[in-house]
Structure formats: C-alpha cells, structure tokens
Amino acid sequence: MGPTDKLDPVEQMLRAANQKQSTVHQVFRRLVSYPDWIVPALLMNEYYGREDSPGPIAIFGTEGRYREKVLWLFSGFGAASRAESAGGQPGVCATGIRGTDLFAKFNPSLKAVFVNPGSPLELTWCIERDHFNIATAWAEVITFEQSILEARSRGPALSLEVLQGYKGFLCLLHAANNGVVTLTSHPGLRNAAVVFTAPDCLDAFLARVSPEQRPGLRTESIYFTDWELLRTEWPDIDGVVLNPVGPGPVAVFGL
Image (cartoon, rainbow, N blue to C red; front, side, top):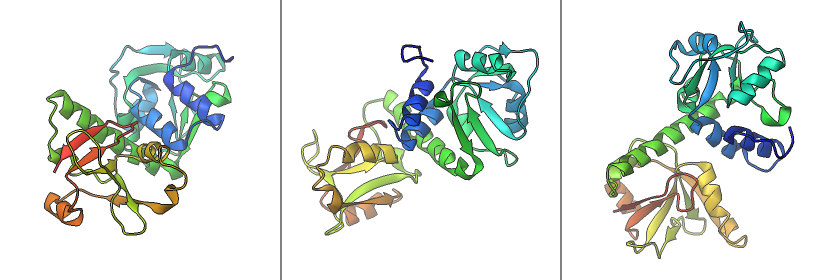
C-alpha cells in the first residue's frame, strides 16, 4: 500500500507504530477504544460465547479457516477483504464490535490476538498471551474514561464520586518533597492537583515540561477512596484537573 491509500484509524496507528512514530500506549488506546471491529462469527462464538452482530453481517469467503487458539480482528472491510484475497478466509463476520468488549477479558484457551492478518506487515499487530494483561488494563482505562464522558453528557458539573473505584490513576510528585504537581492558574481553581487516567496522558503532560525539570519529578499511582484523606495528604490543593492536555478526557473537580 502506498502513502496515499486511505487507511482506517487503526491502520494509521499501526503504520505509525511499526515505523517507530507512535508508542505502545498509543497503540493500545486505539485498539481498545475502537468501536467498529470486524470479527469472524465462529471466533466470537468460540471465545466470547456471542452470536450477535451489532452491525450488519459481513461475508468474506465461503468458509472460515483460522489458526488454532488465535483470535482474528479486522479494523475495516478493506483489511478483511485483504485477508480473503490472501487465502485467509475470514468467512461470516460480525461487525460493530467494541474494543472494550473484546479486550476486557480473554478466553483462557486463547494464545494470541492477530490484528489485520493478511494485510501488509506494517498494518498488522499481534498481542500474545503474555501481554493480555496490558490490553485488559487498557479496557479498564477506556471504560472509565467513557463513564466520565457519559457523566458530563448529563450536565457540566462532575461529582467527585465519578472518580471513586478506578484504580489506574497516576500523578506526578516533586522528588524533593513528595509534593504533588499542581496547576496554579486553572480557571476557578487556585491550586489544582494534576491527575492522569493513563500513561499516555501523563506522557503528554510531561512533553510540555522542560527537560531540565523532568528529572525532579516522579510518577506515583493513586487510588481515590477517601476524599477527606486526600485533603489531609494534599492540604494546599483545592481541586483536581484530570488529563489537562489529553488524550483522555479533560475534567475538573473541586474539593
């Protein structure tokens, strides 16, 4: 495929990753958040116990022939058609499958997930069993971030309770005194702690920090269960800014 060929969002990300132009975190975010996977129906039934197709049924070949204990995923009709042309025979496929449904939990018998088999190598990706835990963690990230967007759709004010229960938060601390990194000029807040839902959100923020200052910062995992305890640990903050520069949803919470 040439540089001018039209690629779907997953293919664009995979090409960038295989050319060392994007990170593994960015790849997993794209794979797990993608809402329109095409999956052979036989494999959906075998590994997920599902016989439904949220979108129209698609047929790529008269019969399905697959590698044993390997799940095939196609990011679009072009990718599935290439597999058929290469002799892969995806067969009858379900469409419109959400990435969060596919990656949240893996069948114990599954050994690998192969994205876009039959496509040029730069448009493919393989997740082996040893890395299923990374995909599952990303499913938790995306599901939580979607819950924030859903809460925001019901009204502009977000309750602190939206943050409770999620275990993947990250923050930055000053190595010298363990003080949390804050924003002192965010609208409506005097001194807001900066918190991230995922590693790529933290990376995006660090990219804005001067190289001279980065060595003085360290990453810490945090779990919001008791807001009074949070106020005790961070007495000088008056709010939380979530993912201030993306790519996860930006949200503001007052304390």
